[in-house]
Length: 401
Ligand code: SF4
Ligand code: SF4
Image 1 (cartoon, rainbow, N blue to C red):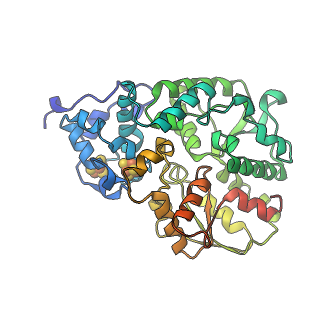
Image 2: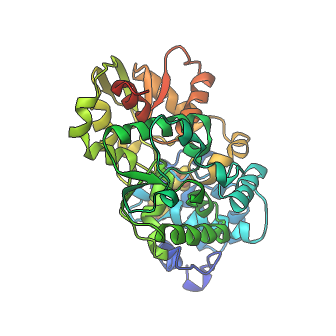
Image 3: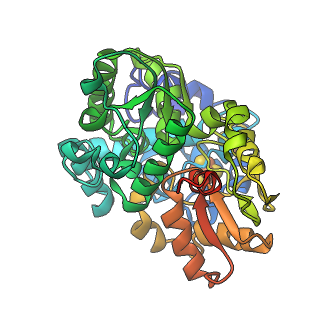
């Protein structure tokens, strides 16, 4: 295969996509080992599993790959990336670029995804809710939740709440509990409230580069107005984006996910964990907290600290954890995926959780309670398994729920 046969990638890589700057050259390092396809939980449903897609691209069959379902069935679980012996970035590099090629032609892959992107453009969140309502949940938190623009002073911790925990009912309840935990720990924190907008993870992975660039530029501008020591984040997807993508546009922050922030304060937290929960719990490693940013232990440290908790592991845990099926833009592609995939990943994951004998499936991602609760019903595990965010479990033990 000569160099001349290698097709150009969909777009000239910009500074936001440095991993693609030499993508053609990099993907020539593919040794066609098939580890990616063998590891891919969606490979069987794809028109072309990852290894074959890479081979076809290198053979110049660009249009066939772009027009296939392959880029849209990738759930961005990152399993291929952590296992690839040539360290090739399929999930965060190649497939977003292929999706961008589709988007650049103005093709609508799915109405739900288009609606979410349109809403984000108009309102700064995929639900299409007025940004003025971002901090509505805080009014009934039962503790002070200061807003940066009203506080007019530096804070230790800026909490970026993100869209789901700001607007969705279950997410809002978890946000209130987290506000109470932060207050109980005496953390000097504030939120952005109506100034906050989507961080852009979904837009980036969906290949909607124009919208992503617009969001990132605005968010950096807003953050530059305020002084804070560090940022904490509820949503692991946005956390990963702020940590790993924003620096390429000048947005460099000391940022960590809420579970890591709380685990650092375990000595302070432990005396507050008074109520014994008497529960066997299994924990689901989300892809963004796990494979993408390696926060495997902090969630487990928090769970083990709760009196009466017995922690058991699923057959796939930590780096081999099975994705919930809602990564990348696929959270808005459920219908598209269900038409093409027999077994939903969330259902498979819930079956793994039920097989441990645990009665609680603990999560640390705001998308997962609703996703897994649906899977619990679909798999007939309603009497056996409940889904709870780690924040909910901590708050119950602290008796502030
Ligand atoms: S795992 Fe990496 S080297 Fe192996 S086939 Fe996939 S992309 Fe190529
Ligand atoms: S990120 Fe996951 S779903 Fe996507 S190609 Fe890789 S292994 Fe498959």
